Structure formats: C-alpha cells, structure tokens
Image: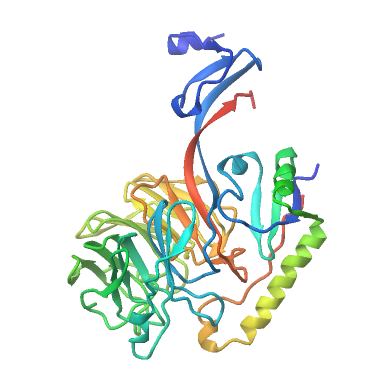
Length: 336
Length: 97
C-alpha cells in the first residue's frame, strides 16, 4: 500500500494538541490525544450579522462587509423608508442623511427604492429607482448631493458596479419597450453611453467588477428569467458560463475573476473564478430582493446581505443581516 | 431517523447563528420566526440557547401558513401598482424527514 510519506516525501506529524487553525490551513497531523487524523480546511459559511434597525425590502446596498450602506427601501407594502443605515461589521446606525429628497423632487414624487447603488460607505452612488426616475445621487459619508445628469429619462432596478468616480450601470426597467439595453459609465461628474449595447436587456440583474472588467448575470427580461452570465471588457460583451439557476433578485460582489453571487429566493450562493461557477453554502434566510441589499466587496470571498422579504418568495419583510466569510476550521478526517 | 427539528426563535442579530453553527447543523429561517434545524445535539443546544420554543412539524407549518395567509390577504387588498412590485406570496412547505 502506498504511504503518505511516499506521496508527499514526509511523514504525518504526531501532535498532542491541534495547532491554531489560523496558521495551519492545508496541514494534516495525527492528534495523539484523540487518536484521530486531523487537518485544517478553509470553510465558507454564512453567519448572522447585526439586524437592521427596521425591516426593509427593496433597499439598495453599497460598501463592504465591514463598512456597508443600506439605502432607502420599503418597510411594508405601503410604508417607505428614507433612512440610510451604516454597518460596521457588527451593528447598523442611522446616518442621519435620508435619501428621500431626491425622490420627493422627482416627477411625480416617488419613493426611494429600486435604486442601483455602488461605491463605498463614504463615497457611494445611487442611480434611478422609484417607479422610474433619472436620479443620480452621491453620498460622502455624511450627506447626499446630486450627481451628473443621467442621460436616460427613467430607469429602475438596474445594476451598478465600481466606484463613485468610476462606475458602470447596466440594464434596468426603462420606458417602453421596458428593458434598458444601455451600458453607461460615470466618471464622478458625467455619464457616457457606450455605443455597444447590453445584449440581453433585463432588470433585477446583478453585476460585479469595474468599468473595464465586469461580470453580469441573471436578471429578468423578456420573456423571463435570464440564465446566462456575460463579461464586459470595456468595449464588448462575451457570454461565459452560466450560474446553476437563472435566478433574478441576486446581488453580486467581488471582481470579474473572483465574484460572489448571493441569490434571493433560494438563499443559494455561487462563486465565479473567471471561467466557471461553483456552489457555496446557502444563507440561512432565503429572501426576495437580494438585488439591492448587499455589499460591493473587493473580492468574492466576503459579502453581506441585509433586508429583503424572508422565505424565498415569502411575505415577511426582514431586518436580518447575514455575512459570508471563509474561516480556517480544524476537521477530523474520516474515511467517509 | 428524523433529520430536522423545528422551533421559533427571534433573530437577535450578530451572533444569533455563527459560522461554526452553520457547519454544525442545517439551519433555515422562515416567516413567523420559524427555524428548521438539523436534528443533532448541536442543533438542539442552539435552539435552547436562543430561548427558542420547540415545535412539531405541524405546529411550525401552521405558523408559516398563517403568516402567508395574512400576507396574501394584504397583497390581494393592495393597489395594482403595489402588486406590480412583487409576486403574490406563495406557499412554503417546510421539509419533513
């Protein structure tokens, strides 16, 4: 029988106690106390984060897992939320900078929900929203100001990625025929419309990345949910491997070559490595409207989801927050 | 052998369930603060530690059904504009095994 030493060139160490998980990823040893083989594996999972101060759905999210923003939304079928909440990785606080002023000024007056959002907690950008508006708002960590004039009359439920000063906005609902095919970029003061259209006009889609390296997947268009994923290199689109299910209402975070897609109605999670998708652990709370309430982390290994309607097509607005992390974990090895 | 247990518990936020909990047992939240929990020692200890109340599958399903019925009634009474924002809440069947 081939031995471990013959394969790897060294024997398995005998240890009386487990080494710290933080420094032993990939190691294998024999624990002489428990008489078991053990190893440290990097294990991903969702855990509970601090609850939002109120139940919210149809909100928008920006920032990262430890510095996120929840912007606007609805607290029930008729009550709107104007609050902007800031997350520090543990709890949410009201920013005291409500976002409703943009939408009160829209014609007709509308509510602050269904926006696309991107950027950071101290430099965020929102686009469109309401039933349909052309709102562009910039947040600096303490106050909102109007951004550069949006070149399309109305949009909602689109997707935005990148930074406040280098953002890309794709898809969404727009005036008839209904789904926006435009690809727009923003430099912090003005918008540019790409001559190359988004090939599968849709809303409630998710994106991750930058203005020149973007991953877009899912969404709902005509005639229904869209399965495929597409990469944008700044000038053209390429269809790439599709996630396992054509869910809309997802939020993506990370970059084009390492993205995390957090689905809504099933709570499922998938990671993209630039060429293929793999399944990651589910959230504990399946929830509708993940499109909005999520972060824009810089890698596909962390993310945070907040708000939505719990139950996966269920009825209950939720304040629940969940955090996706990968942690080194000592595991006992078995033959099964 | 039964795979799941059921209970109600209020999500208190950070730490309510941990990264380790998610590795130790199945956990899925549903309307009405209903939780479906993998039936093992760690799952049972988690529910107890959260001051949860154990329910039978039938009791848990009834709580979820009541939440959905109330939401459907609310949805049916909403305006067309509001209805356009979301689908009518559909049934949720808790796993039973």
